[in-house]
Length: 172
Length: 141
Image 1 (cartoon, one colour):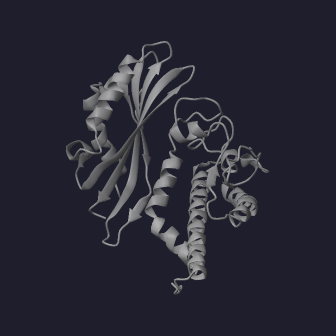
Image 2: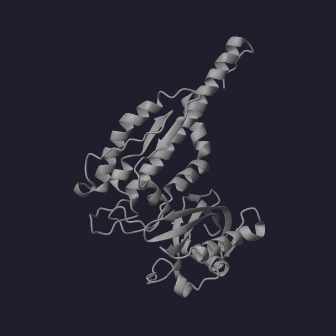
Image 3: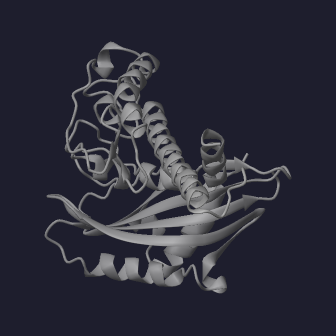
């Protein structure tokens, strides 16, 4: 780390750098959580239709609605451009990431110190997908809990050193 | 490779003893042909698993290995039995007490880190959901 003189300007520069590093760490953490959740979703989706046997209840409709917002909660719900039944999951995954990265990654680059980043998904049946339970809101008949929120939190906790070090590398 | 089901069986033994339920007639686990039809109370077990980490000393483990239990009550029946069983199970484990937090499974260090309890209800049944989060270290790698 560079040396900063103990003057008003020097301290102000130090403060600014530290603030930018914290912001970069926030951004890295949000991206990591979001990518974990997207990745989880792709692996949980099985190519089957109504009446077929589904995986853990994820749908591309659900996966398409993960988002990162700054200073607010995104309550909008997108309808995916392409149905799961028309394309393989890998093909869809590529589309989704491209679509998402256009929006939220651009927003994250504008984060200022003190801003709050929220990773959201406003699809109404999210709680059931996470917690499981005997609910028949969709055509899925499996009731397994996914617990993707807890798993994403654990992934972030386990890799926090990596998140911080990449934030430090980002703001030299 | 970590034998996840061996760990789950170790946890199940403690849960069944604490809840004082008959595993043949009240417990639904993966692969069993258990049918809860006509039952007013039953327990369902789900393995969630966790993010496997490989350590530099060739061991592996999970910092949050999750197993979830549902204590179901059929709609219109008293929830007393489910609530009592869930209460007994959560009292059996305590992350702050070394005697109550470890589960004995051969070859694995299994330590309870967190218990979270939530409730869910729909037109068919109501459930007390108990989620156990364990830290597991596999000595064999």
